Length: 323
Ligand code: AMP
Image 1: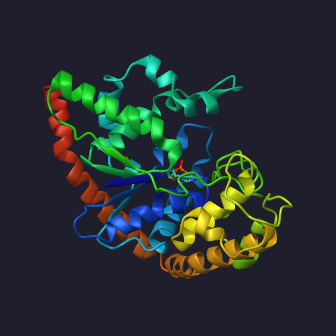
Image 2 (image 1 turned 180 degrees about the vertical axis):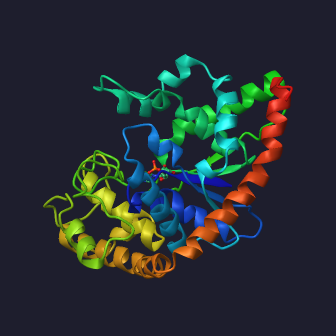
């Protein structure tokens, strides 16, 4: 099982519910080999600041540990394992230009820009490499990664059919609820860590005062009788999904007993504060002790490299490289 998080900003509650929490559950189960990487290479497909990239890579890694990642899991920075970029090139030689230009995220992120980095077009091949290197069967991702995961599956199947059975064709593991947490101020948009405005974003490391302020500003409506209707009441539905996911219930069940937008916001705030309180505390401990994070990342990179090496070697041989 493998999953990655881009260090383009602080982790949001969307990252937590969509990808991190499902990963924690799998990592705690000894039947799974779990790899979590900070996708620093994916953070360079748009304009970036080198110093900020370095700092955020460590921050995201520390946040994942603070969320409670089991020590058995392998945590590493993607760029520390060279096999990712090496396999990505072999997969670029498997992919077609047309299918890359059809990626929704490429279209969205390139629209209106006169100059975009070539890596914005090619990074889905790197993402396929991230997953295929470890012969992962399961990839916990939010809904926004559905199309990239389909591409990963196609590339694996195409490579296997053309050159021999090297890759495992992976399945996405998308949570039933909160697979797409929306911006609290703009429920039509995904909550993103690099969104221009952070007014509608709850970050995993936010303190209770900030959480309460962000939730208070959430868009709801004036109907005191709450109901779950994503089309007609998107703001209420988003909060209901958030509350349901945080408290282990369906969105409909989470609304039972609550009255009006105010009642719903109070319940959401309480659930967020309770869920995130221990994470903030552990994060504080980890930042006070940078050597622990360094050691975890170094051990993780070594282990990931060892796991990746046989797949890369098999792919190189299959595709016809002699060296
Ligand atoms: P990224 O922020 O693009 O690095 O995404 C890291 C992981 O979090 C991926 O699995 C995404 O699918 C997931 N994710 C990002 N934003 C959200 C969101 N708003 N709701 C649910 N999952 C999300």
